Each structure stands twice: as structure tokens, then as C-alpha cells.
Amino acid sequence: MNSIYGKSGGKTEVLKARKAEEYDAHLGYRVLEALRNYVQHRGLPIYRLEYNASRQETDAGTYVKHIVTPYLSVSRLKEEKGFKSEVLEELVAIGDLIDLKPLIREYMESIGRVHLFIRELVKNDVRKWDSIIVRIQKLYCDTFGEDAVGLAAVAREATEKLTESVYIFEDVIKHRQWLERKNQSLTHYSSGIVSSESRLRSV
Image (cartoon, rainbow, N blue to C red; front, side, top):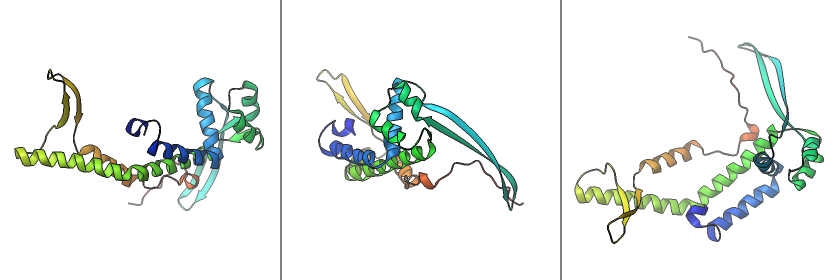
């Protein structure tokens, strides 16, 4: 967003405000942002990994369900310092050992909402940019009577020295549109479980 619209004003400021809303509304967002900074400047914050296994009886047979839980130690974060104090106080109110999984899911849902917001925010501009690319390709085809294998817009100095080039092709547009269709729902992580469970299909 900064590279397209600049670091201040317009859509960039609108996005900053939207991210601030998510930050204020969701503890998971605040904790994971603080953890990211902690990892960058201090170290690994995971205090304990807990492994559990339980038998699951199903119509297809008996399975063993394995669960891995990463824990934060609030007291340890307090001792080592370097963790955002305001967020740390919120964690103190919850307890010492904190399961990270719900916080991670909440954070990912916040990021998903921000991402969907960005899509909507730039939708009209993206539509214009797409149409420019398609129009340029059509102009080339109509002018030379052949499909463009490789097409670029170039900038030259008075000395004919090439100073900049931008390749023009539809593949990027098609790939983005495919990703948008594939990832229409980005806010369902609280209700999702990652599993390697499989069922044998009868032949």
C-alpha cells in the first residue's frame, strides 16, 4: 500500500485506521504483534510444548488423536523484559501459562478481515489497472495482427538509454483473480482444525 499510494494520506491512512480497529478489538492481534517484535529483538517466546494423545472411536475404526499445544509463560516474559508492557498486563490477568492456539487463530482472523478490507479499498483502482493492461495488449494485437508473446512499456532518456521497463501480461491478473476466488473466506480460523485425519474409501 505504501509503495502504491504513499506512506501518508488517502487510502494508506484509511488502512492504518482499519488495522488500529482490529488491534484495539482483539487480544490475539495485540499479543501476536507483541510476540513478533519480541522474536525479532529478544528470542523464542515459547515456554513449553505440550503433546497429548487420546483414543478416538469412530465407525471407521479406532484412531489416536495427537495434539500439540505451545504455551507462553507470562511470568517468564515479565522476568526477561522486552515484551510490550500494556499487552503483558492483559496476559497477567488471564494466568501464567497461556495456550497460544486461540490467540493465533484470532490474530489470523484479524489479518483476514484487514486483507478483505484492502481488496474492497483498492477494487476500483485494480479494475482500472487491469483494463489498461488488457487495452494495451489489444492495441498491440490490432496494430501488428499477432498475439503479444512479450510486451513491455519502456522509458528512455534523450540518449536512447533505457531507464525503466514494465512488462505487460495478463497472467498476473488471471492469477490474482484465481487467488481471490480460492480465498474468499479468510475469517473462519476459530472454527477450523488442522488435521491429518484420513478415511479409507471402499473399492
